[in-house]
Length: 135
Image (cartoon, rainbow, N blue to C red):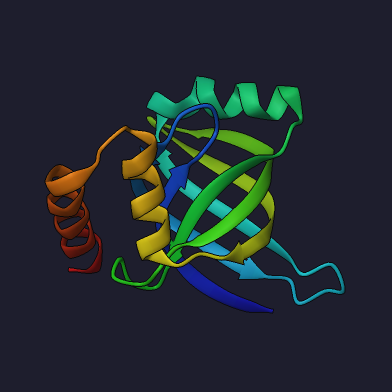
């Protein structure tokens, strides 16, 4: 098994939502189903959200970035295995598979187009977000 530091997590469930992480890991189980184990440590503000996802038992899409924030995110499909309170923070354990290798430019452009941007505004926002995400 290979372990990577999870540096960013963005849920694509219902609406796009960046989850500020305190810490996180992404472990490649290297099994025949190409499954990953994801642990995200965050503020308890997200307790209801992840508890609801766990209770529904449904899979959801997310973008997970490992090692450095300048890396392109991987598009994953995950289910919540557990949500554990740890003082004022929570640990969320998820089972995941990589849906496809995301190209950061495609992800950013798709989001901007879905928000109705076009023309010069689209171009300016695209450049700004690419610069922000890549450092």
